[in-house]
Length: 343
Image (cartoon, rainbow, N blue to C red; front, side, top):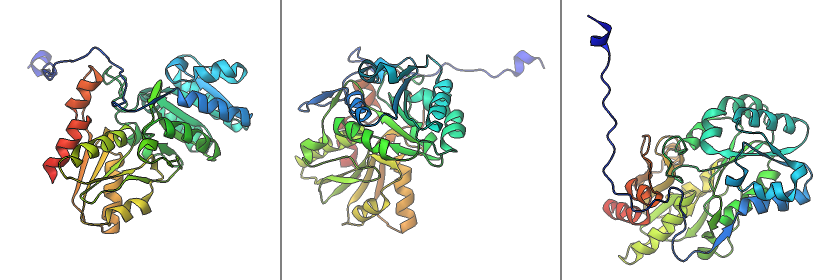
């Protein structure tokens, strides 16, 4: 038997034959009717830095793509360009935190979660240092394929002791999470929505304010309870309005903090009436919000019909974001249709 005869035959990966409707690889996530806010993270960080001299900004050669360029322009003496070296970025941030600073380290989510994980675990999380890791392109918010799609970042960091996880929905969340991150004495990983970010939550709940560790009801409903995080809260709210036309009354509970999870609010709402409970997240079905909620329901003995809307346990395709969101079930139409099929 020769080596050639023993070698495994690899078949080319089958690509779904889906028509790409647009060439936009990174498109607006906003639906029609929502106002947008430019670079809410960058402006919020500048505002906090003017109040607190300990705040620093660090980038891995991606400041323009994480809105940290706003900070760099306003406070160049407190901005550090670390180059394309994410492990160095996290190590430097850890060292600065040891010296009493509050460094905001920014890059893409794939690079922080995959490439720099061990440095974050050993230098930052184990020492419980106040390093704030803020990362763009979380989940399926880019069409550039698996190399840029951080579909498993929450699962990676959720198992890391001391690490707080934030998945903001909109501009209000992004701006509100910055002072909350500064106030928290420990490491934080936050998913980032950058550029022109839709302002969603205050349209549905005018008095909404981000609070670390707290889930909030944005919409009441008697038939279905959607427990959502990140951009999927926006999609859940839009799907709820669409389903209302079919006399399906949908409640939406927004969970911007994945860890620590607001167990009390989630359990109270899940027990409130005989509703279908659905989690919705811009993350793989493995290890994210859906599994976290399911765990709490099981441990508390809350027995309700339960379903998950999430990305599949797979490497996703490249293409236009609207096409990909429809393909993988994150679009408003797909969310509404899926919920109707479960009722």
